[in-house]
Amino acid sequence: MIRPAVLLSYASAAALSLAAAVTLARADTPEPAAVVDAYGDIALAMYEDALAGAKALDAAVDKLIAEPTEDNLKAARQAWLAARPAYQQTEGYRFGNAIVDDWEGRVNAWPLDEGLIDYVDKDSYGEESDENPLYTANVIANPSLRIGPDVIDASKITKELISEKLQEAQGVEANVAIGYHAVEFLLWGQDLNGTGPGAGTRPATDYDTANCTGGNCDRRADYLKAASDLLVDDLEEMVANWQDGGAARKELADKGENGALATVLTGLGSLSYGELAGERIKLGVLLHDPEEEHDCFSDNTQNSHYYDQVGMMAIWDGAYKRTDGSTVEGPSIADFVAAKSPEAAERVNEAMKATLAKMDVMKKTADSGEMAYDQMLAAGNEKGNKILLDVVDSLVAQTRAIEGAVHALNLSIEVEGSDSLDNPSAVQ
Image (cartoon, rainbow, N blue to C red):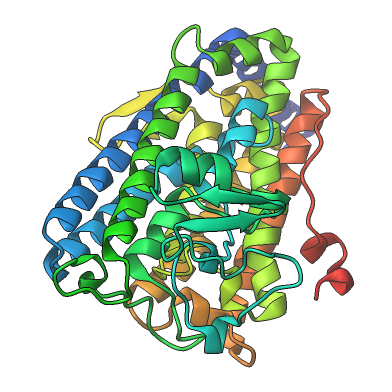
């Protein structure tokens, strides 16, 4: 039997050890300004990598247009796929940073009514929509276009035409004319497989003026080039915003230390909950609708979701692995929370690891060819639905852990919601 005095000495030693750990943690607490600076440095690195990917895509598009072969179309598609991971990792900068969220619709808006841009299969797509007068406007086939009371000269397809006249024309969000998903549609075409296997199968001859399929191959090439160039332009703008002294850095600094820290956690919480768990995943499962798949033409959605999570973890940990293999790192929000509440920080760490594990199941299932993401959405596909709903549940738990970190810092944030999570009976 251990004597009470010995028990007391063990307890005292444990208490002293804990006290020493707390003292050390307080001594190592990063300054809020240092955390915010590192957050900005990681944003800059992520957007620089996204820009490099967009430039590689633009070069592949040039080659496809010059030589419209199946090999060059395949290379352009591969460049699009390769460009996505770096961009998706930036999405944790949305929501809290208005300058990012206001801009995001130019590069990653979805879902889109693709009939605005080009020909569609009307048997599956339909010929009109009560919500969108431009549902089948097909600007590639029409050099003149009526938008509301105005007739638009579309005889030359330019960056200005598609970004200023067509993007969200008549206030309809589904009129997505620019960004990654417009380019995706122009490279893959529609995915006409529903929740069956297979992605879009646009032929390279859609760009071959000598052997043209789909009609208007010269105008389709003009559109693809304009959209690809715009993607580069828009990412250059965001890189500039995150340079030292850039608009995004200034906006963050103007919020003060607590406001800036709240911004970091708002981005992580809102992307986890309303956007990713709700609008991008749960909604598609509730509706069993492949049109709610994020990268619906290329069947790349599993990767887009996965790299959203990778990006959130990089922001939380203050360490981003660049596409060239180097790492940008600095004092993190995780360090700051851990210094205030080790338990709250550990809950976020564990929740993020758990979410990544569920995302990994989704990604490997799709990447292996066993079951594409849109097949997982199908009604009656219990295994596929469960894979996605497991991701949703983990993202919701991750959000709750992030909210715990907010509480530990005595901050206040507003997390973006989603009917698919908060009021599923309203979803139809």
